Image (tube, rainbow, N blue to C red; front, side, top):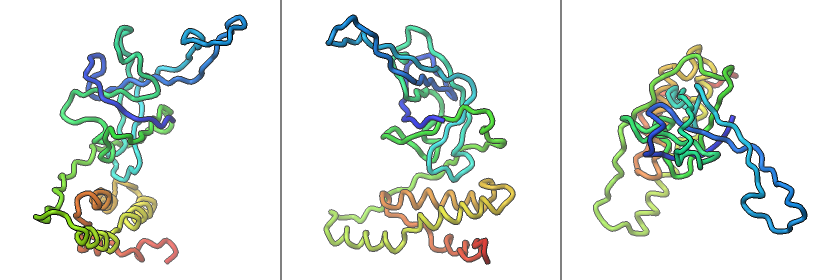
Length: 221
């Protein structure tokens, strides 16, 4: 498994549902006959081009659709993509970009997991989650220090991110369908809302949280 960042390309050679990924594995320094100064020609890079069906995901992956199978492809020898190493290059074509399908990822430095071991392929796949984009709360005035203080207190009172993640893990372990269980799917949505709480100002609904009694999922009770 590799953990890498992702970039988008507008260059042809990589289509929707595909990506290019070349891994530099070793750096060998050539012997230069006693020369002290080393140039770019002094180095030999060896690596591996990943091709075929691979699994890509990122953390946190709570929704079943946060794990996707895509096709790793090669590109023409004259493609500028050939100069990119240790980074996944995905296509900008298609109705929806690949990172956003993986737990709402983006290109600001998120790390993605590339799995190419056939024994680790998921037995069942799901469409990626497609949650409605939350509109940040507009307080209708210039933000003052008191507003920031009030929000900080509200955030501390309503931050359920850890609780939701723990409940999801317990339920996925207890139910035969794992993360495909409807309760797990609901918790994945609540988790997404909780993750964005600090940016949108919209907390997880207390009514929806009340539907999940933490004591019910205690395996020791």
